[in-house]
Image (tube, rainbow, N blue to C red; front, top):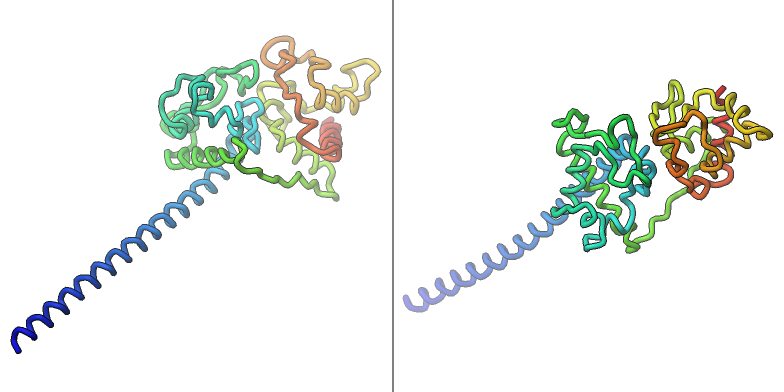
Length: 276
């Protein structure tokens, strides 16, 4: 009788141990799932925060979609190519891509590495330092958020995913505001100064462009001159640019007409014509 009791208790104990082990393993798998889900959620928050920071600090030079302007593009295969022909190898960078982004954003660049294509903002530097430790406005966690957002372009840049972007929808009841939206979206404030609107050190000042444009090229109206300056900027170099970056006919991108619709281009010209 005692032996049977001992056997039963031992069996029950063994079953309890087995059941406890199974439960622990199950909970362990659940915890791994929870950790993975939490990590994904945190990454999403980081990317969202980085997107907000990018829009306010980086888009005017590097483009709202990361395809470049006066600053180099991020949303391109070359940037994400980690092989011998990629951007990291071109610069001799031996660390990770994320570390490269963090280092560049933190300390900025006194000189552009490709001045013929992406001259930067000028005024003694190509790109300002953004990290607090170098006099910029961003904390280390914000710099990391920016890096996460920029890296999130990899799938699109390498052709693994196609991102459909909605075109700008100008407000029908305010054509001048529509033109200003296009002006900002193309990154024009990074190069051109408009009193009370933007301070751009690279291109000619546009504060009174509607008045000045009519005197630029004989036989061309102000509207025709402004339109040509946007779609074919090398056709006429402003006398306001005898030297310096804006005297270079390649300094202004030649692709603006491809980035907006005819209606948006017309609204941009209309906005500039209002600057008298």
